[in-house]
Image (cartoon, rainbow, N blue to C red; front, side, top):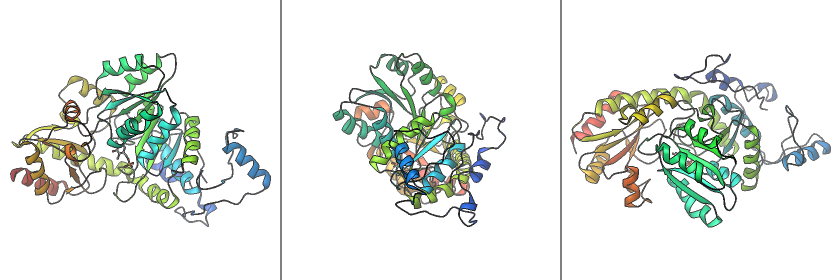
Amino acid sequence: MPRSSKPQDDSGKHRDDSAAIHPETEVLRRGYDPRLSVGSVRPPVFRSSTFVFSSPEAAERSFSIALGKLKAAPDEDTELIYARLSHPNAEILEDQIVPLDRGATAAAVFNTGMAAIGTVLFSLCRPGSGIIHTVPVYGGTHHLLYEMLVPWGINPVAVPAGDGPALERAIRETSNLQVVLLETPANPTLRMTDIAAAVQAASTRTTPARIVVDNTFLGPVFQHPLALGADLCVYSATKYLAGFSDMLGGVVTARDPELIVQLKSTRALLGNILQADECWLLDSRLPTVSLRMNHQSNNAAQIAEALSDHPKVERIHYPLFFDEPDQQRIFAAQCDHPGAVFSLELVGGKKAAFDFLRNLEITQNAVSLGGLESLACHPATTTHSEMSTEELTLAGVCDGLVRVSVGLEDVRDLLRDYSRALDAI
Ligand SMILES: *Cc1c(COP(=O)(O)O)cnc(C)c1O
C-alpha cells in the first residue's frame, strides 16, 4: 500500500536542487511495497470490487472516516471498503504521481480528464457560485460550463487568455467567486496566462477563491502551478501522462490534502475513479513522462525553427516565437521548456490547411495530443467547431490554422514530411 513522503522537486530551469531525492527517482521508489505482493517488482492488478475487513471494528472505523464522521489520524492506513471509493491500484498511482508535480501533497485519479474537471467544479461550486475561466478553453470544459452548470445556477465569466488586467478585474469584481480556472497555455494558440498574478489577485479577496490550472499541455514536467500558489492542477492523463494514445485518464493534484479528500468524496458518489487495469497502465508510464516530454519538446522546437521562414507559413504559434513582451515574460517566468504542440497559420486559409493535412505521410490527421506518434488537426472545423465565427476570430483560431502534436519519430523524417507537405500545397 502507499507510503507517503514529502513532495520533491522536478527537472528544468526552475529546478529546486535542495531536495535529497529527485522526482524521476522518487516515482520509481514510492507507492508500492513488493513485500506485500510476494516480492513482485511491479505491482499486481487488484481487480476486486470489495475488500475483507480485519475486524468489525476496523469496518466501523473505515466507514466513519469515509462518511466524514471521523478524521483519520495523520499516518493512519484505513482499511479499503469498496472499489468505487478507492482501490489499491488507485492508491499506488496517486502516491506515485505526487513527486512529479512540484508542490503537490496529494492526488486523485479519475477515468478521464473531463471527469477530473467535472468533479472539481461539482465539488467546489453551488448554485450562485461564480467561475472565472480563460478563453479559448477545452471544448468539453466549455460545454460543461455553459450547457450543464449554467442551468444549475452557476455563473461562468470568460476572460481572454493572457489578458492580465481583465483577469485581475474579474477576480476583484466577480461575486461569490469560487473557482478561477486557467488553461495555460491555451489551445491551439498557446497564449499563456500568468498563474502567479492570478494567485496574487485572488489573495486580496475577502472570501477565498480556488485557483485551478488545467496543466495538460506542459505539466507535470515543464510547468508547476502548485509551486506558484495554485490550489489544484488538473490533467487529462490521456495526453502526456499516459503518452501512448491507448487509454483515457484524469488526475488532480493539490497543495492541501483536504481538497483531495473533498474531491474523493464526490468521486465516490459519481463512480468516476480510474479503474484498476487503467491505473496499472498509467503508473507504468509515469517514470518516462519526463524523458518523453523533453524529447518531444526538442523535436517540436527544431521543427518550428525550421518551418518558421517557409513561404507557406504565415505565422507559428509557439512559445519560442512569442512576439508580445508580456507573453515572453510569462513564458520565461512560468515554463521550463516550450512543449511539443505548435500551430501553423498557413497562407491560403482552409484549403491550404486541408491540403497540408492530406499531404502529410508520417503525421496522422487526428485530434488529441501528447502521444508518441505525431498528430495534426484543423481546430476550426474539429476541436473548436462549437465556437462562433466571432469567438474563433477573438481566440485567434483562423481558417488556415493547423495544430500539430509532435511525437517521438526521428526529427529528420518529420522535417522532411512537413517541408514536402507544405511545398505541395
Ligand atoms: C484532452 C483535454 C481535456 C479532456 O481530457 P479527456 O481525458 O479527453 O477527458 C481537458 N483539457 C485539455 C487541455 C485537454 O487537452
